[in-house]
Length: 113
Length: 115
Image (cartoon, rainbow over all chains, first blue to last red; front, side):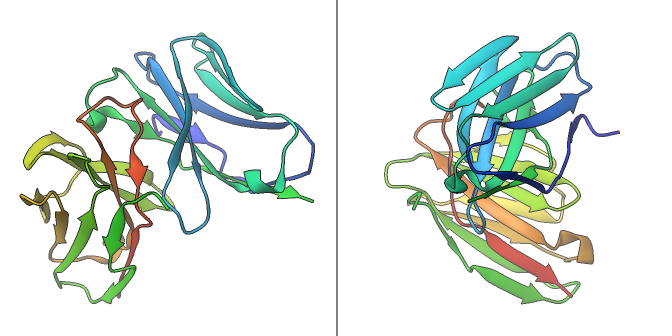
């Protein structure tokens, strides 16, 4: 079993819908939770991160962490065609040491105009 | 455009061969990271260099090696290639060594196909 599980999709939703992307994990020591966005034929880019539990909002994006359930989510409100990309979750026990950064395999999202 | 360049874009080679992937970080960035991305394993951290010195090591195979040169560009050497090494290889850079939440700027990647 992988430390981080992510539904690969693909996920297709109409423009304007609320999108929910999720990851589950098994390592209870994870403290830092990140979401990356990767457009086709491009490298990933850090979208946002959350430390420990709780929510974090940035514009149309909300990251949510539920450590009791070992479950994290990324919500996208008022989805746009430009949000079409693969979304990767990533987690780490500490903020230092990239060797400890564990990624999910990504969810491919398509927003239909 | 992230400012990170990688060459070549595509590489097709045979099993048992050796290849070199090259990365030029953004101007001013001292830290370079290498990642491997495959469909079944996702994105995996390989190795990090900071100002010419190895800083962190991930799941990098012994057949793989990397270095960062005085001009800060980096090379990833893959030898005795196997079919399973076929993947996208990304280079990323950041200003300092940083932490996992610091912004890394990723290059466009090199797609390696081993036949």
